[in-house]
Image 1 (tube, one colour):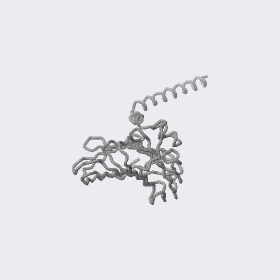
Image 2 (cartoon, chains in turn orange, purple):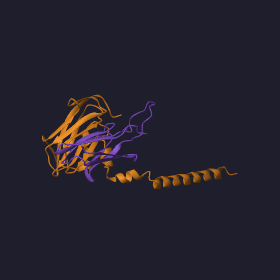
Image 3 (spheres, rainbow over the protein chains, first blue to last red):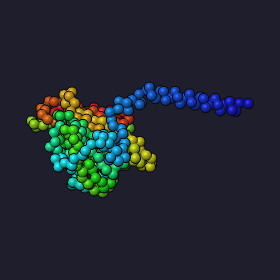
Image 4 (cartoon, chains in turn red, purple):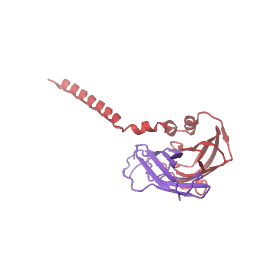
Length: 162
Length: 105
């Protein structure tokens, strides 16, 4: 008698269960990190191109090419055997640095690192990044309200964005 | 995932500057890599790293997936003397956290 009825009932039960689960997950704090990290610029980090990433971070701004940034990628410079861990080093004589942005042009998600120093920090800053293939690596420094850009091309033997 | 290795930090003052070096133990999965069974490894990477000296914030670094495995950072702080406490805290995209602390030598 109740084939249809049963089906209906199952559907209702399923919906109730999934609704409860969602409510539980939402209240349990599993989603909390995302909320706490609201200041993590999701849009910029998920951007697929350098332009989008920069747009999300600094808006449209004039970029100056600048020689006062010394930026080294790879070791020896401009070359890396293993793209999974490429040393980068950044030094600059600029004062009042608000932000430093490191972008790898051909990575699936170009934005690699966003550094927000206080006035207590001084360069050089060193770190390691992943680079998927031969690519340009850009460093953008925002200081005194202006953007200073510099770019290095780097050759990679084994891609490292896995 | 269990992380076996320990986060490490070194800080040394030379009068004018304090040099801080940090090596965090983290797999930094991008979400695009495969494991040995050709299954996608879910994304797991550090998003936010902050550094304090004696409870005063010095630096924050936001990372995407392109930071290398076992992230390494080195930088300098103005001033500082032996005995200062340098603290580093990190949070990854899954909400895992770590703290590592050292005394400047």
